[in-house]
Amino acid sequence: MRGSPTYQVQQIFDRSGINQIGQSKHDAKQSIRAELNEQGKPCGCHELGQNMGIHSYATADAYRDVWRQILEYARAEYGVRDVEKLTDQHVSGFLEQKVSESLAYATFQQYAAATEKLAVALNGYAERHGTGQHYDFHGALKDVRETARELLVRFDGSRAYDRPTDLVAAVGKESHNLAACIQHESGTRVHEHSQIKAEALRGTRVDRFTGEERGYFAMEGKGGKEGLKAVSVETYQRLEQHIAVHGVFTINEGSYRESLRRAAEISGQRYEGSHGLRWNWAQERYATLQNHGQNELQAMCEVSREMGHERADITMHYLRGK
Image (cartoon, rainbow, N blue to C red; front, side, top):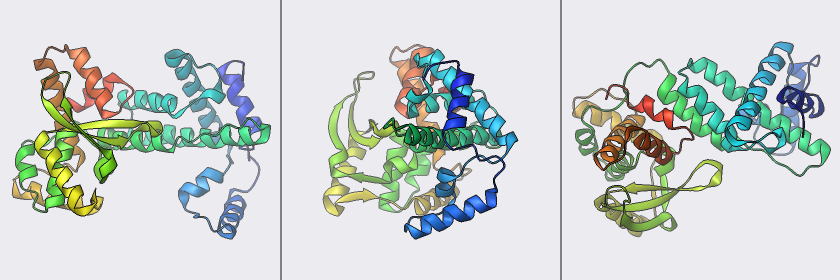
């Protein structure tokens, strides 16, 4: 599609079926619920959101403004001038930019909701015009929302644990202790290490920055792309042995967090959630890279890349209180 960002956004709004202003939102919800139930599909909040249009002028104005900002961002950062060519990489980068601006979490949620609705509008436009395109920003939104919760929710300071090694040592259950080691050594989000299969193991190799041998496993990153996470050889061997015995490494995320909470009490530390270990990893990796010749900007960029972020300045949030 050609034209200014404002023009393209208006075309998507007008020609996708997303514009439901003047129609009953309640009736629309009831109709969608009935249709989903008839098809035997889930009809929770996410599914309703994927099928609902926009029913108020205020919401329409707010969402179109965000859509325009996303396209302007994609033009400036990636040279993408066509709204139909937006991908999860573009929206992820845009939302990470908003996180880096330290806006209120509630404001970020509004940006995320508008972005989610953009995918609905783009899919509606594609279906009506037979373009064959499909848009799914759910994975990108999930990751950035988790980052926003870590960095923006009623927070001023560092969420890193004071003594992460003591915390990990105090985690009693074997699988949870292994999970804590993995998270502290690789900076994973919980869902990235809550299930690791044998085919995800990638063996050991030398870290190109430190010269240290590390064990690597694969996880699914943004856009379904494979990402690699590195742990110590000792932890990697524990992971291999666990999978050899049990067939897969898996944990219940809620139970794991509860184990960390108990470990924080045992080790005399404030509980910072599972993401506290991610903060520790970011700070430690940043220092390690600098100790091995990287300057501040290079270290910041590499830490962001290894964490799966599009923007280097996201790392600055994790360095607070360091």
